[in-house]
Image (tube, rainbow, N blue to C red):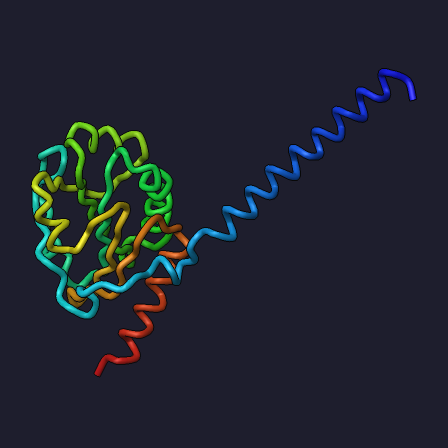
Amino acid sequence: MNELARRRFAVARWSALGVLVVVGVLVAVLATRPSAAEQVTQSPLLGKPAPALAGRTLSGDRRVSLASYRHRWVLVNFFASWCTVCVAETPQIERFYYSRPDGQRPAVIGVLYGDTVADGIAFARNEGATWPAISDPGGNIASNWGVASLPRSYLVAPDGRVVAAILGGITSSQLDQLLVSKAARLAATAP
């Protein structure tokens, strides 16, 4: 084997090794990522009326309250601009929101937690979040909802009860499955 062939073989061998390492890391990440079932977590709020949630939007242009969305599914999402999982999750929530026709869309309310309003506004603009978000400067809203880490989301049924608590990031398809299963369960128990 001449010198050029030996170098090509060495480059090919190292390239193959690099690809194997990348594939191995990807498999490890996917294998250790929590499933949707693990992300839907226990909460003392489950089955109970959702805590009050109201405030002015981050831009200050209007008032938002959970009570104004009575008789509609609502996803309450606690987020911050410094939360990398929140950055990844935001387009998924947006896709979830727009995947349903107008009359069947769940509402989404964001709650900015542990962050400045200016950073929250920049986050919403940069990540394409179109739902209303309010600030929680003292952490009282987060405390009432039992939020200790981000992201954290809650699915609130049309009757105002919390039916799911989601710890960590979630995808659009996982949100769709969760909504469909919870809606079916509520329909099965309706009088």
